[in-house]
Image (cartoon, rainbow, N blue to C red; front, top):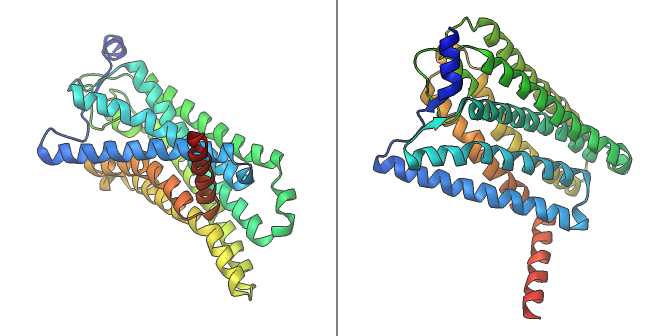
Length: 315
């Protein structure tokens, strides 16, 4: 067994990927790269807009900048390696590289899920206690919310990375995925993984259902507060406040729960790959679009920035 462990450590793994070199898959690969480019540019732009515009220095936009940072790191952790393997035809990843990819992926997905959950509490305070919002969501609270999201994600990532990389891998080193995904990697282990499967499921339940329960509780309270509002204008404002967050939550949690909370007998590698593409590439692209195109303050800050650039170029 030691010989196999050393071989895995030395030789690494092969990522079978999601695309072949057929015409249809070349088109799909081009689409994924276009989506990646939009995700990269959109999240970088949103972070800079929030940082540079003093009018966006509020709790909601601080959380949004952290969400964009997580999305940016997530796509950069997965897509460049996938693209390099597809274009070069090598499909290899080192043992250490695989471990790093697992750690970052689990950390970022866990952190983003928890942050989305805690952002629902921010929306509840904004709708239900607007006058006390600056006090209840002060800088210290905002830092505690983002810090706890990152901390839980990092802990989850380190646990899963260490556990997965501690297993012995024998025989085939071909991972039926386009990145080092824990469940796909476990199929190659030549040891009993039942304990790790239980640990993985417990981590997924905690990191998905805990923030999801916060979201449900927060929006139940928001709904109760909205139903007591008699003004049509206040209704519209409450809806505008929550709609972008609800859309982002639906996209993220829909794909994540499909991926990790399905019974094993219903799982198929092809389904897992499609779901992974959805929340590792598509969702990071959609988040900045959802929060910018549907948000007058962000679009206003973008227009002001473009106007300043135009005036500066004329001088």
